[in-house]
Length: 96
Image 1 (cartoon, rainbow, N blue to C red):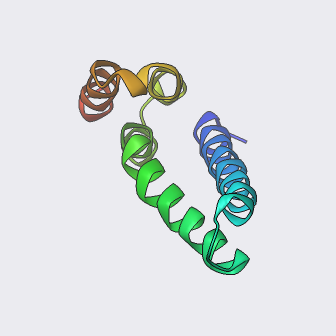
Image 2: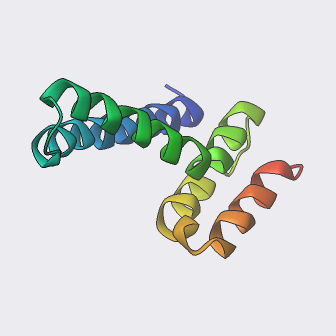
């Protein structure tokens, strides 16, 4: 298995963990609406927030970057600072 597919599986695994966690929390924390509606809202919100957050990682994997693991780590650990996210995005968009 090559490095790129390992990173892709890691990203998918993290997304699944976050979505399942959102389902569990969304279904139990919502008051006044059904459990299913709370779970559905949690899944939609997770995808809407995580898709743009991991955009640099997605771009790096699609472009076949050699440093996609480092871009993923930068995105995961410092992406919340916006500066880290922009650095990861620029790094993913640049040539190798």
